[in-house]
Length: 307
Length: 307
Image (cartoon, rainbow over all chains, first blue to last red; front, side):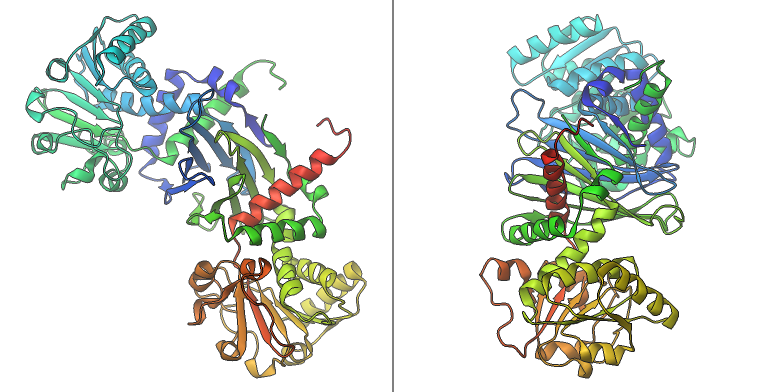
């Protein structure tokens, strides 16, 4: 009765379209669903950490166990296991391993924000950060806007060059490594995907009409954006309470607007062409639950798989 | 690579001996292992609740998802799923459904306390409570002491009579329903397994030398024992911080002794024949992790199971 989806199965099933639809479902559910306190634990080696993010919405209830084992060399350092309970009985319903799918999930949240908040004619995408997640961000965002030029900003010129080549190969877009000022000023859409603890750029470099999706800040002390940006910007996030506690907006006094409220038509998104819109993603359990459910539906729809 | 043990498999594998050994391992691990904050969540129907209890000890790291769906009629209202991570990689290692096994686990903790703290010649066992768990408690305790008489105390005389007949059938022991005063006064070992929110008996009824295991209190406001008992008693529990926060000892100012310290030889247990010893069980993740590991070891030791 319990369905089990292994890492290789979920990795084969996931794509940007599935992840974006699951993200939309999750953000719409933030108004009616619940998320519960996040637990941060570790193994007997304290550097090996896991988080428990649990929640409920509609007929979904469960928990995502995210793990970060920094010493992994053969396997990715991040893993993810989503456990769904049967809403009718409380019994175990499904277990979905989702390390690869988790990167799609996170990128889909930022792409959803871009789709909802960025100017429709956004053509230039700048990404700050050259890691695994940054590649997913470029791919997901370039699906929702007519991106024709990508700029890449990294601390190391070599890493930025290598990353630009990878992004070009995956997306088929022109990709150029540039300095932060050039990248920020040129961006219609700016995505930050780093582990920074101080601002990555100067607020004065941001031109009117830019949309910024920040996905790196997920804990106290983390910061990617300059606070000088905020007085002139419209601020959005996944969960306001969480974003102002551990997300990018821990550094701002104003309360951001939940993206789910914009999607539901309960709050305005971008009002004018010159608005600077900022979205902060700190991640929440409903994204994991809807992702797992979408993966399970997709597998159930495949013909003749007896596994 | 992930091992999955279904409810029917774990129910077939568990027994009192396995559960007692796993409990001993868990209590000994409390000194070196860690437990992380407990999450209490719910489904979209708030009466359907789940708890997340996570921890680590040695090569064990994981979480127990316990669920309580009070409206279940065909299935038990309590379910339990234990998820183990691979300590070397953080990846999912095993999923063990353990609703039936969970009752053995909880009874084993109380039996371990009886084995450690009760007089060796304890012959009379009184149980207050007539539910499913109470039956497990009698069975587990009667394995670790030469119990020759069981008394049963219940709020409803009919329920107590029925329960006494069930216990007699399962254990082969003489079982008699009695009033609380008779049962408490006669007890060498007294087990309380109720959902009470006020004391179940008068402290003056307890005779010197009695051991009491209280397993019902697991949340604020719950209480089974009279506070007048404490000044003259020696107090023990599973996790002192948890027991004084949400367990029976939320109603006492003294700090109880961890049973794990007694097992490890780091703290005295019963000192004299006339000591009244009290053990409070509020439950902790390491019990679930060691139980899951023991079930997995037992299955691995079975010949020729290709499932």
